[in-house]
Image (cartoon, rainbow, N blue to C red):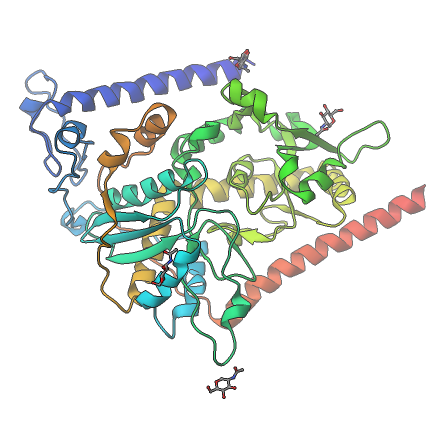
Length: 499
Ligand SMILES: *[C@@H]1O[C@H](CO)[C@@H](O)[C@H](O)[C@H]1NC(C)=O
Ligand SMILES: *[C@@H]1O[C@H](CO)[C@@H](O)[C@H](O)[C@H]1NC(C)=O
Ligand SMILES: *[C@@H]1O[C@H](CO)[C@@H](O)[C@H](O)[C@H]1NC(C)=O
Ligand SMILES: *[C@@H]1O[C@H](CO)[C@@H](O)[C@H](O)[C@H]1NC(C)=O
């Protein structure tokens, strides 16, 4: 309790600090500061002479220029579209990107031989919510159909932040984006000797039978409707959340909370809940969306949900954005055999980062995993730590942007035509979205705003898998899962002998 109180005190403090930053930025609005110019010190708030703080070299901040936008209604034209990090002698040399970036090569392989023609891109218009075009470092969007909630808004916002982070470095391109959960480009329709190339379509997840190109989902910039803050903010909170209780102090059960109504497999999971007849070591809760939406989702605080030793991840109607929040908690993640992948989850290794749960025998599988973990505490804690470290190290926002950067770069290399701005497209910039936004949307946009160009270059793209190393990764995964199934079978056999 005490640490929780301290934590919220720190958080309030942080919030005040953020508030202070926003206020100083507002002060800058009244100056002549425009994009690309570092404010002259005489124009910002007064300093005592001799105390002019030096900005670290290369750390250029570009505040949102709402007054100019409100006045003219056009995006800033002098946004620095060329930026040369190599001019900064202190620039750190970029590290190699995390392993999961290698899947970018796999996801674009369907077009490796043919390249991508305009006709292929246009064919993806069947289901796309919008077409995004980048020409000369500026973004244009042609909207076809409004997406559910603010998925499209925060997805486009993410693209705009990438442009602020790497101005002038994101290549010209045209792409189609579909914000609906399920992948829709079946691979079997595009295989065989006479097959046409598939339409390239970006979305948040895909599975082994589809060719949709996976891209980070909107929740990295915030999910306004259910008050899930931008990843950069939550990331730190979740890290703190791990410290509230040691693993041993946590409830020795498997916890899940969510909406069971949206998928049969979730209703099946609920049958494993503790009851008078049985205890499968599962403690499962249905999210009361009606009540929680009225209360501002204050009970859904993700950072305070790391109080069970085991946490279950189960897909909903497709992949679920909850996965990264669950993995970030250093309890053991129990993953019910998933069908879908998003841009980073192919990195997860069973037994190393999570414990695999059978789809068709959930209750017994959960019961066994919890018993195993409670009797192999050291190993169980190591699994929990491994997933939380993976998220902390490989899924920080820097890498999310670098993933977007490299995916778009590789995609653009395949284009066989010169991207042009469609007649019906509108130019979008961070000002066009954030200055007019209100409430939670505005708050999340300001929280996730990229302050200025990155001081270092994007991480270095790892090479593609060769067929045998890709096969080795897949085999290692399959073997770990088989191993767990064997342990599980032996466990239930010995249980039945006992009774
Ligand atoms: C999709 O593109 C095709 C080919 O350019 C065009 O004929 C069709 O009208 C477009 N459909 C939609 C829904 O925009
Ligand atoms: C592929 O195209 C060729 C030439 O048009 C045709 O003879 C052949 O039957 C087609 N094969 C299939 C599987 O459709
Ligand atoms: C699971 O059981 C617990 C304890 O009896 C109960 O509080 C909870 O509401 C149950 N969950 C569901 C989804 O019924
Ligand atoms: C959440 O908000 C509701 C209504 O505003 C309030 O009654 C409740 O005490 C709050 N709960 C928490 C845990 O803050």
